[in-house]
Image (cartoon, rainbow, N blue to C red):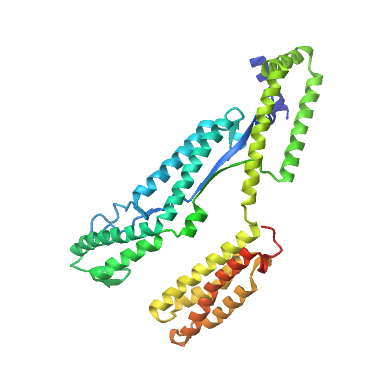
Length: 406
Protein backbone atom coordinates (compact mmCIF):
# COMPACT_ATOMS: atom_id res chain seq x y z
CA UNK A 1 0.00 0.00 0.00
CA UNK A 2 2.87 2.35 0.89
CA UNK A 3 4.71 1.52 -2.35
CA UNK A 4 1.58 2.33 -4.35
CA UNK A 5 1.17 5.65 -2.52
CA UNK A 6 4.84 6.51 -3.11
CA UNK A 7 4.56 5.74 -6.82
CA UNK A 8 1.45 7.94 -7.10
CA UNK A 9 3.22 10.82 -5.34
CA UNK A 10 6.27 10.50 -7.61
CA UNK A 11 4.05 10.40 -10.70
CA UNK A 12 2.18 13.51 -9.55
CA UNK A 13 5.46 15.32 -8.84
CA UNK A 14 6.89 14.49 -12.29
CA UNK A 15 3.75 15.25 -14.30
CA UNK A 16 2.44 18.09 -12.18
CA UNK A 17 -0.99 16.44 -12.26
CA UNK A 18 -3.03 14.45 -9.82
CA UNK A 19 -2.93 10.71 -10.61
CA UNK A 20 -6.31 9.17 -11.44
CA UNK A 21 -6.63 5.49 -10.37
CA UNK A 22 -6.71 2.95 -13.22
CA UNK A 23 -10.11 1.62 -12.12
CA UNK A 24 -11.58 5.10 -12.28
CA UNK A 25 -10.04 5.63 -15.72
CA UNK A 26 -11.74 2.44 -16.92
CA UNK A 27 -14.98 3.63 -15.35
CA UNK A 28 -14.74 6.94 -17.22
CA UNK A 29 -14.12 5.11 -20.50
CA UNK A 30 -17.10 2.86 -19.84
CA UNK A 31 -19.29 5.93 -19.23
CA UNK A 32 -18.23 7.38 -22.57
CA UNK A 33 -18.58 4.31 -24.74
CA UNK A 34 -19.47 0.62 -24.87
CA UNK A 35 -17.57 -2.65 -24.63
CA UNK A 36 -18.08 -4.65 -27.82
CA UNK A 37 -16.91 -7.87 -29.47
CA UNK A 38 -17.65 -9.69 -32.73
CA UNK A 39 -19.19 -13.15 -32.87
CA UNK A 40 -18.82 -14.60 -36.36
CA UNK A 41 -19.23 -18.36 -36.70
CA UNK A 42 -19.38 -20.94 -39.47
CA UNK A 43 -17.50 -18.99 -42.14
CA UNK A 44 -14.92 -21.77 -42.42
CA UNK A 45 -17.43 -24.61 -42.74
CA UNK A 46 -17.17 -24.74 -46.55
CA UNK A 47 -13.47 -25.62 -46.65
CA UNK A 48 -11.59 -28.59 -45.21
CA UNK A 49 -8.03 -29.88 -45.32
CA UNK A 50 -7.57 -32.12 -48.35
CA UNK A 51 -6.62 -35.73 -47.64
CA UNK A 52 -3.58 -37.47 -49.11
CA UNK A 53 -5.90 -39.65 -51.18
CA UNK A 54 -7.63 -36.65 -52.75
CA UNK A 55 -4.41 -35.18 -54.09
CA UNK A 56 -2.92 -38.50 -55.18
CA UNK A 57 -0.30 -38.99 -52.46
CA UNK A 58 0.64 -42.50 -51.42
CA UNK A 59 1.09 -42.55 -47.66
CA UNK A 60 4.38 -44.36 -48.09
CA UNK A 61 7.62 -42.39 -48.30
CA UNK A 62 9.33 -45.30 -50.07
CA UNK A 63 6.89 -45.08 -52.99
CA UNK A 64 6.05 -41.35 -52.89
CA UNK A 65 8.84 -39.01 -51.79
CA UNK A 66 6.36 -36.20 -51.14
CA UNK A 67 4.79 -38.03 -48.17
CA UNK A 68 6.20 -36.68 -44.91
CA UNK A 69 7.48 -33.48 -46.49
CA UNK A 70 4.50 -31.96 -48.24
CA UNK A 71 1.13 -31.62 -46.56
CA UNK A 72 -2.23 -31.33 -48.39
CA UNK A 73 -3.81 -27.91 -48.73
CA UNK A 74 -7.44 -26.77 -48.50
CA UNK A 75 -10.35 -28.24 -50.44
CA UNK A 76 -13.71 -26.60 -51.16
CA UNK A 77 -17.02 -28.24 -50.21
CA UNK A 78 -18.94 -25.81 -52.41
CA UNK A 79 -17.56 -23.88 -55.42
CA UNK A 80 -14.78 -21.41 -54.61
CA UNK A 81 -16.80 -18.69 -56.34
CA UNK A 82 -19.42 -19.01 -53.57
CA UNK A 83 -16.87 -19.06 -50.73
CA UNK A 84 -14.87 -15.99 -51.79
CA UNK A 85 -17.68 -13.43 -51.22
CA UNK A 86 -18.28 -14.88 -47.76
CA UNK A 87 -14.61 -14.61 -46.81
CA UNK A 88 -14.54 -11.08 -48.20
CA UNK A 89 -17.46 -9.80 -46.16
CA UNK A 90 -16.10 -11.41 -42.97
CA UNK A 91 -12.74 -9.67 -43.49
CA UNK A 92 -14.50 -6.33 -44.00
CA UNK A 93 -16.62 -6.88 -40.89
CA UNK A 94 -13.47 -7.34 -38.81
CA UNK A 95 -11.85 -4.30 -40.43
CA UNK A 96 -14.85 -2.07 -39.62
CA UNK A 97 -14.86 -3.38 -36.06
CA UNK A 98 -11.15 -2.67 -35.58
CA UNK A 99 -11.45 0.77 -37.19
CA UNK A 100 -14.17 1.90 -34.78
CA UNK A 101 -12.96 0.33 -31.53
CA UNK A 102 -9.80 -0.06 -29.49
CA UNK A 103 -8.28 -2.75 -27.31
CA UNK A 104 -7.98 -1.70 -23.67
CA UNK A 105 -6.17 -4.03 -21.25
CA UNK A 106 -8.84 -3.80 -18.56
CA UNK A 107 -11.68 -4.68 -20.94
CA UNK A 108 -10.40 -7.89 -22.59
CA UNK A 109 -11.84 -9.77 -24.45
CA UNK A 110 -14.00 -6.79 -25.45
CA UNK A 111 -12.88 -3.75 -27.40
CA UNK A 112 -13.86 -0.27 -26.23
CA UNK A 113 -15.90 1.83 -28.68
CA UNK A 114 -16.34 5.57 -27.95
CA UNK A 115 -19.81 7.00 -28.31
CA UNK A 116 -18.69 9.23 -31.18
CA UNK A 117 -17.69 6.18 -33.27
CA UNK A 118 -20.82 4.18 -32.56
CA UNK A 119 -23.24 5.67 -35.17
CA UNK A 120 -20.77 5.21 -38.04
CA UNK A 121 -20.00 1.64 -36.93
CA UNK A 122 -23.68 0.66 -36.73
CA UNK A 123 -24.39 2.11 -40.18
CA UNK A 124 -21.52 0.21 -41.82
CA UNK A 125 -22.20 -2.93 -39.79
CA UNK A 126 -25.83 -3.09 -40.97
CA UNK A 127 -24.70 -2.91 -44.61
CA UNK A 128 -22.15 -5.69 -44.11
CA UNK A 129 -24.57 -7.80 -42.08
CA UNK A 130 -27.19 -7.56 -44.86
CA UNK A 131 -24.55 -8.62 -47.37
CA UNK A 132 -23.44 -11.53 -45.14
CA UNK A 133 -26.97 -12.89 -44.74
CA UNK A 134 -27.75 -12.44 -48.43
CA UNK A 135 -24.70 -14.60 -49.21
CA UNK A 136 -25.95 -17.14 -46.65
CA UNK A 137 -29.40 -17.18 -48.29
CA UNK A 138 -27.83 -17.67 -51.74
CA UNK A 139 -25.72 -20.61 -50.50
CA UNK A 140 -28.76 -22.30 -48.92
CA UNK A 141 -30.90 -21.81 -52.03
CA UNK A 142 -28.18 -23.18 -54.32
CA UNK A 143 -26.98 -26.03 -52.07
CA UNK A 144 -28.53 -28.78 -54.22
CA UNK A 145 -26.95 -27.24 -57.31
CA UNK A 146 -23.60 -27.13 -55.52
CA UNK A 147 -23.92 -30.81 -54.55
CA UNK A 148 -24.29 -31.71 -58.24
CA UNK A 149 -21.26 -29.58 -59.10
CA UNK A 150 -19.17 -31.15 -56.31
CA UNK A 151 -20.18 -34.64 -57.43
CA UNK A 152 -19.08 -33.93 -60.99
CA UNK A 153 -15.84 -32.15 -60.03
CA UNK A 154 -14.77 -34.75 -57.47
CA UNK A 155 -15.18 -37.49 -60.07
CA UNK A 156 -12.51 -35.69 -62.10
CA UNK A 157 -10.37 -35.10 -59.00
CA UNK A 158 -10.66 -38.77 -58.01
CA UNK A 159 -9.67 -39.91 -61.50
CA UNK A 160 -6.57 -37.70 -61.43
CA UNK A 161 -5.68 -38.93 -57.93
CA UNK A 162 -6.20 -42.56 -58.99
CA UNK A 163 -3.87 -42.20 -61.95
CA UNK A 164 -1.16 -40.60 -59.80
CA UNK A 165 -1.37 -43.21 -57.05
CA UNK A 166 -1.82 -46.25 -59.28
CA UNK A 167 1.19 -45.25 -61.35
CA UNK A 168 3.36 -45.37 -58.23
CA UNK A 169 1.88 -48.55 -56.75
CA UNK A 170 1.83 -51.07 -59.59
CA UNK A 171 -1.61 -50.14 -60.92
CA UNK A 172 -3.48 -50.65 -57.65
CA UNK A 173 -4.63 -48.40 -54.81
CA UNK A 174 -5.11 -49.43 -51.18
CA UNK A 175 -7.26 -47.22 -48.93
CA UNK A 176 -7.58 -48.02 -45.22
CA UNK A 177 -6.37 -51.54 -45.85
CA UNK A 178 -8.85 -52.14 -48.68
CA UNK A 179 -7.68 -52.63 -52.26
CA UNK A 180 -9.79 -50.60 -54.70
CA UNK A 181 -10.12 -50.57 -58.46
CA UNK A 182 -10.64 -47.27 -60.28
CA UNK A 183 -14.45 -47.37 -60.17
CA UNK A 184 -14.59 -48.18 -56.45
CA UNK A 185 -12.00 -45.50 -55.67
CA UNK A 186 -13.91 -42.79 -57.57
CA UNK A 187 -17.16 -43.78 -55.89
CA UNK A 188 -15.46 -43.73 -52.48
CA UNK A 189 -13.95 -40.28 -53.09
CA UNK A 190 -17.18 -38.72 -54.36
CA UNK A 191 -19.24 -40.11 -51.46
CA UNK A 192 -16.63 -38.87 -49.00
CA UNK A 193 -16.72 -35.35 -50.49
CA UNK A 194 -20.53 -35.19 -50.57
CA UNK A 195 -20.79 -36.34 -46.95
CA UNK A 196 -18.82 -33.27 -45.90
CA UNK A 197 -21.05 -30.72 -47.65
CA UNK A 198 -22.87 -28.90 -44.81
CA UNK A 199 -26.61 -29.52 -44.63
CA UNK A 200 -29.13 -26.69 -44.87
CA UNK A 201 -29.82 -27.14 -41.15
CA UNK A 202 -26.11 -26.84 -40.31
CA UNK A 203 -25.73 -23.71 -42.44
CA UNK A 204 -28.82 -22.13 -40.87
CA UNK A 205 -27.56 -22.86 -37.36
CA UNK A 206 -23.82 -22.25 -37.60
CA UNK A 207 -23.33 -19.50 -40.20
CA UNK A 208 -23.95 -16.40 -38.08
CA UNK A 209 -22.56 -12.86 -37.79
CA UNK A 210 -23.36 -10.40 -35.04
CA UNK A 211 -21.71 -8.30 -32.38
CA UNK A 212 -22.22 -8.48 -28.64
CA UNK A 213 -21.81 -5.80 -26.01
CA UNK A 214 -20.96 -5.93 -22.33
CA UNK A 215 -24.24 -4.18 -21.64
CA UNK A 216 -25.72 -7.66 -21.30
CA UNK A 217 -24.73 -8.13 -17.65
CA UNK A 218 -26.52 -10.01 -14.94
CA UNK A 219 -28.03 -7.97 -12.10
CA UNK A 220 -25.32 -9.34 -9.84
CA UNK A 221 -22.55 -8.10 -12.15
CA UNK A 222 -24.11 -4.63 -12.43
CA UNK A 223 -24.57 -4.35 -8.66
CA UNK A 224 -21.04 -5.55 -8.05
CA UNK A 225 -19.53 -3.06 -10.50
CA UNK A 226 -21.67 -0.21 -9.15
CA UNK A 227 -20.58 -0.96 -5.59
CA UNK A 228 -16.93 -1.12 -6.65
CA UNK A 229 -17.20 2.16 -8.59
CA UNK A 230 -18.88 3.89 -5.66
CA UNK A 231 -16.10 2.67 -3.38
CA UNK A 232 -13.42 4.11 -5.69
CA UNK A 233 -15.28 7.39 -6.01
CA UNK A 234 -15.67 7.66 -2.23
CA UNK A 235 -11.96 7.00 -1.75
CA UNK A 236 -11.07 9.62 -4.34
CA UNK A 237 -13.48 12.10 -2.74
CA UNK A 238 -11.89 11.52 0.67
CA UNK A 239 -8.46 12.17 -0.82
CA UNK A 240 -9.70 15.30 -2.53
CA UNK A 241 -11.09 16.69 0.71
CA UNK A 242 -7.64 16.30 2.29
CA UNK A 243 -5.87 17.91 -0.65
CA UNK A 244 -4.68 21.46 -0.55
CA UNK A 245 -6.16 24.30 -2.57
CA UNK A 246 -3.71 23.83 -5.48
CA UNK A 247 -4.92 20.29 -6.12
CA UNK A 248 -8.55 21.41 -6.00
CA UNK A 249 -7.79 24.07 -8.59
CA UNK A 250 -6.08 21.49 -10.83
CA UNK A 251 -9.13 19.23 -10.64
CA UNK A 252 -11.39 22.17 -11.42
CA UNK A 253 -9.27 22.96 -14.47
CA UNK A 254 -9.57 19.33 -15.57
CA UNK A 255 -13.36 19.50 -15.30
CA UNK A 256 -13.43 22.77 -17.24
CA UNK A 257 -11.26 21.44 -20.06
CA UNK A 258 -13.21 18.19 -20.28
CA UNK A 259 -16.74 19.59 -20.28
CA UNK A 260 -16.12 23.18 -21.49
CA UNK A 261 -19.66 24.13 -20.66
CA UNK A 262 -22.90 22.53 -19.56
CA UNK A 263 -24.49 22.72 -23.02
CA UNK A 264 -21.70 20.65 -24.57
CA UNK A 265 -21.95 18.13 -21.73
CA UNK A 266 -25.71 17.76 -22.24
CA UNK A 267 -25.29 17.28 -25.98
CA UNK A 268 -22.70 14.56 -25.38
CA UNK A 269 -24.92 12.83 -22.84
CA UNK A 270 -27.83 12.77 -25.29
CA UNK A 271 -25.64 10.95 -27.84
CA UNK A 272 -24.36 8.50 -25.21
CA UNK A 273 -27.90 7.76 -24.03
CA UNK A 274 -29.03 7.22 -27.64
CA UNK A 275 -26.16 4.80 -28.23
CA UNK A 276 -26.96 2.82 -25.10
CA UNK A 277 -30.65 2.65 -25.88
CA UNK A 278 -29.86 1.34 -29.36
CA UNK A 279 -27.56 -1.30 -27.91
CA UNK A 280 -30.13 -2.31 -25.28
CA UNK A 281 -32.60 -2.93 -28.11
CA UNK A 282 -29.92 -4.93 -29.91
CA UNK A 283 -29.29 -6.94 -26.75
CA UNK A 284 -33.01 -7.55 -26.21
CA UNK A 285 -33.30 -8.90 -29.76
CA UNK A 286 -30.39 -11.26 -29.08
CA UNK A 287 -31.94 -12.46 -25.83
CA UNK A 288 -35.22 -13.27 -27.62
CA UNK A 289 -33.29 -15.56 -29.99
CA UNK A 290 -31.35 -17.21 -27.17
CA UNK A 291 -32.19 -20.85 -26.48
CA UNK A 292 -32.60 -21.95 -22.87
CA UNK A 293 -29.15 -23.06 -21.59
CA UNK A 294 -30.76 -26.25 -20.23
CA UNK A 295 -32.31 -27.08 -23.61
CA UNK A 296 -29.08 -26.27 -25.44
CA UNK A 297 -26.97 -28.54 -23.21
CA UNK A 298 -29.60 -31.29 -23.38
CA UNK A 299 -29.86 -31.18 -27.18
CA UNK A 300 -26.08 -31.10 -27.65
CA UNK A 301 -25.55 -34.15 -25.43
CA UNK A 302 -28.36 -36.03 -27.17
CA UNK A 303 -27.03 -35.03 -30.59
CA UNK A 304 -23.48 -36.21 -29.87
CA UNK A 305 -24.74 -39.50 -28.48
CA UNK A 306 -27.01 -40.08 -31.48
CA UNK A 307 -24.16 -39.25 -33.86
CA UNK A 308 -21.98 -41.90 -32.24
CA UNK A 309 -24.84 -44.41 -32.38
CA UNK A 310 -25.38 -43.64 -36.08
CA UNK A 311 -21.67 -44.25 -36.79
CA UNK A 312 -21.87 -47.62 -35.03
CA UNK A 313 -25.01 -48.49 -36.97
CA UNK A 314 -23.35 -47.71 -40.30
CA UNK A 315 -20.26 -49.78 -39.41
CA UNK A 316 -22.38 -52.77 -38.36
CA UNK A 317 -24.48 -52.61 -41.54
CA UNK A 318 -21.34 -52.63 -43.67
CA UNK A 319 -19.62 -55.44 -41.78
CA UNK A 320 -22.66 -57.53 -40.89
CA UNK A 321 -21.14 -58.38 -37.50
CA UNK A 322 -20.52 -56.65 -34.16
CA UNK A 323 -16.83 -56.97 -33.45
CA UNK A 324 -15.09 -56.39 -30.13
CA UNK A 325 -14.14 -52.73 -30.65
CA UNK A 326 -17.63 -51.86 -31.89
CA UNK A 327 -19.15 -53.60 -28.87
CA UNK A 328 -16.83 -51.65 -26.58
CA UNK A 329 -17.96 -48.36 -28.13
CA UNK A 330 -21.60 -49.42 -27.80
CA UNK A 331 -21.19 -50.27 -24.11
CA UNK A 332 -19.48 -46.92 -23.57
CA UNK A 333 -22.38 -44.84 -24.96
CA UNK A 334 -24.27 -44.91 -21.64
CA UNK A 335 -21.27 -43.62 -19.67
CA UNK A 336 -20.64 -40.98 -22.34
CA UNK A 337 -24.25 -39.75 -22.19
CA UNK A 338 -24.29 -39.58 -18.39
CA UNK A 339 -20.95 -37.75 -18.40
CA UNK A 340 -22.30 -35.04 -20.71
CA UNK A 341 -25.26 -34.11 -18.49
CA UNK A 342 -26.06 -33.34 -14.88
CA UNK A 343 -28.53 -35.94 -13.50
CA UNK A 344 -31.48 -33.52 -13.63
CA UNK A 345 -31.14 -33.21 -17.42
CA UNK A 346 -30.85 -36.87 -18.40
CA UNK A 347 -33.68 -38.36 -20.47
CA UNK A 348 -34.97 -41.60 -18.96
CA UNK A 349 -35.86 -42.92 -22.42
CA UNK A 350 -32.31 -42.50 -23.64
CA UNK A 351 -30.87 -44.01 -20.45
CA UNK A 352 -33.15 -47.06 -20.83
CA UNK A 353 -32.24 -47.59 -24.49
CA UNK A 354 -28.52 -47.18 -23.83
CA UNK A 355 -28.73 -49.61 -20.89
CA UNK A 356 -30.46 -52.17 -23.11
CA UNK A 357 -27.80 -51.64 -25.81
CA UNK A 358 -25.09 -52.17 -23.19
CA UNK A 359 -26.61 -55.53 -22.26
CA UNK A 360 -26.95 -56.58 -25.91
CA UNK A 361 -23.25 -55.87 -26.49
CA UNK A 362 -22.36 -58.38 -23.77
CA UNK A 363 -19.50 -58.38 -21.33
CA UNK A 364 -15.91 -57.76 -22.35
CA UNK A 365 -14.61 -60.94 -23.94
CA UNK A 366 -17.91 -62.02 -25.47
CA UNK A 367 -17.39 -63.74 -28.84
CA UNK A 368 -18.43 -61.73 -31.89
CA UNK A 369 -20.76 -64.47 -33.13
CA UNK A 370 -22.65 -64.50 -29.82
CA UNK A 371 -24.03 -60.99 -30.28
CA UNK A 372 -27.50 -60.57 -31.79
CA UNK A 373 -26.83 -58.26 -34.74
CA UNK A 374 -30.54 -57.78 -35.53
CA UNK A 375 -31.44 -56.78 -31.96
CA UNK A 376 -28.44 -54.44 -31.71
CA UNK A 377 -29.31 -52.81 -35.04
CA UNK A 378 -32.92 -52.27 -33.96
CA UNK A 379 -31.81 -50.73 -30.66
CA UNK A 380 -29.37 -48.36 -32.40
CA UNK A 381 -32.17 -47.31 -34.76
CA UNK A 382 -34.39 -46.54 -31.76
CA UNK A 383 -31.62 -44.39 -30.24
CA UNK A 384 -31.16 -42.48 -33.51
CA UNK A 385 -34.93 -41.98 -33.93
CA UNK A 386 -35.23 -40.56 -30.41
CA UNK A 387 -33.52 -37.34 -31.55
CA UNK A 388 -36.42 -36.51 -33.89
CA UNK A 389 -38.94 -37.24 -31.13
CA UNK A 390 -37.15 -34.90 -28.72
CA UNK A 391 -36.83 -32.17 -31.38
CA UNK A 392 -40.60 -32.32 -31.98
CA UNK A 393 -41.29 -32.15 -28.24
CA UNK A 394 -39.10 -29.08 -27.76
CA UNK A 395 -40.60 -27.41 -30.83
CA UNK A 396 -44.12 -28.05 -29.47
CA UNK A 397 -43.17 -26.85 -25.99
CA UNK A 398 -43.81 -30.24 -24.39
CA UNK A 399 -41.82 -33.19 -23.10
CA UNK A 400 -39.08 -32.92 -20.52
CA UNK A 401 -38.72 -29.13 -20.83
CA UNK A 402 -42.38 -28.13 -20.87
CA UNK A 403 -41.79 -25.90 -17.82
CA UNK A 404 -38.57 -24.31 -19.14
CA UNK A 405 -38.93 -20.80 -20.56
CA UNK A 406 -37.30 -20.68 -23.98
